[in-house]
Structures are given as structure tokens and as C-alpha cells.
Image (cartoon, rainbow, N blue to C red; front, side, top):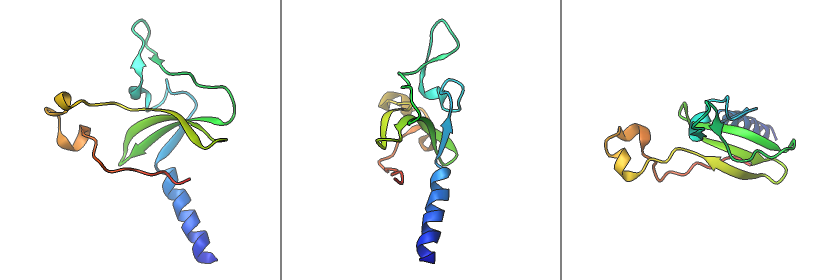
Length: 110
């Protein structure tokens, strides 16, 4: 029983290091994943639904923000996610370690 408790505790601590719940995408560290309004200094985000079950999450990996996600905690599903896409043409001149997405998948604990 103690081993199960330890594993659950460690997995909970590990999952906390991969995300940050924010109150507003516009004023968060993951605002870079949304397009800027041409006439304002704010970002244009998709609809953020009203309700306690919707959480705005900034997800990071290896100390770098990777995604912005609107998550429905009641249904346990992401409503949408946003990230920066680097096309093949653009990434050829950039550092390989920083901007090319790999085939490695990251699974979130549920």
C-alpha cells in the first residue's frame, strides 16, 4: 500500500511540472502561440467558454513553453490547443535543437 501511495504522489508531482494553469492567455507566458491583433497589442484567442470546468493551461517541456490548451475538466478532454508551427522551409535555417518537432510523443497522466 505504501508503494502505491508513493507512486501516486510522485506522478502527481511530476505532472505539476509540465503545466501551469493561467487565468488569461493574453497575459500568460504562452501568449506567443496566438496571433496578435493588427490594431491592438492584445492577442486573438479562440472562444474561452464560461464555466468552472474550463481551465486555460500553458504546457511546457524542458523549461520551454510548447502548447496553450483549453481543457474541459468535467469531460476530461482538451477543447483546443495552440502551438507554433515551423514549416520545413523555415526550419532549415534554424538551430536543430530548438525549433524542429520530433516524432516523440508526450502523454499526460489522467
